Image (spheres, rainbow, N blue to C red):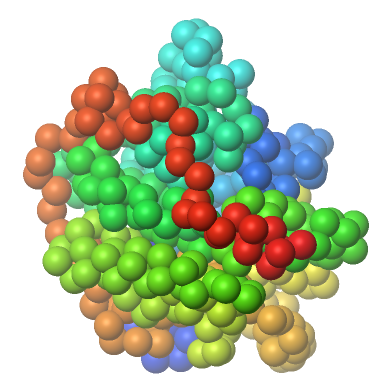
Length: 413
């Protein structure tokens, strides 16, 4: 989500006209993570020795500002696993970038350790005091048992929601603040999506929906670059083979409802074009055919400074920290390599990439983004106890409707 400040209007206008200004960037400050979520494999590659030093972070921040970046998301892994996160927050805010931190909301060592939980929230508060206004926190279910199972950590639901409600109350009424829930849409939670929208509103958050992407075969994990980021988890998959009409009907019901909620003003971060593309992907497996702006409107940087046009591509460019990177980025050689990469990619459904393209390719996407950004939030967000009492689903989470699991297993296996 891009904040529309006076300083950034020129960059946004130029990006809309040319689609050649990298207004959005993602930097994984670390690949280390305290969770091993079922759909994610990046935690297997965490190495503190490969991460940038504080002085290098300041160089990166200045370089991104010169390139025209408006919005930066600091992700991972888990950003709070890095002791340099606060340094990074200060560096990028000082350069005038609109900053978002993508966190799982779970303290290192789990929040059931009271000391660890308090230390984690103290770090969150320090980031807010430095001027950070935007966080994204993962939550895929209102059933604590289901979410804990997805994260493979007991107590993850309580920890994440405690962090969300703390942030929601700290940022209430703060101009430009839009904390967001990131929800991965899978076979397990299709029926929960409308309630997750309402839950987000109650705690002072928006919500962003990302359709699940999984490896099609367990063996892909040893031969597929994409296996660095996703895993073979058929229980999350949505069957598209024989007898999948029931699944398609579930997808349509879920997306009809959240698209209507968005039209009614609910705090859904995704653009309607992206939600429609997500619906189609979940039903057919086909990625959007509108083209890719990777390396133009957006790019990605790894913890060690490696530059890629997006998360799917293998590193083949000059390192972002190289003194000659800016000249290279504006060169014909870079554009030639970028075009070959983008043309050969099968596509993806990552909201940070595809929704940024939707914003600049469609008037609907642009104005929906602007409207959500400027809409004030005045209601008092729920605190943790209120949120848990009102929204936590007790008992074991129900299995998907009959037949869907078998279809998912066949499709993914």
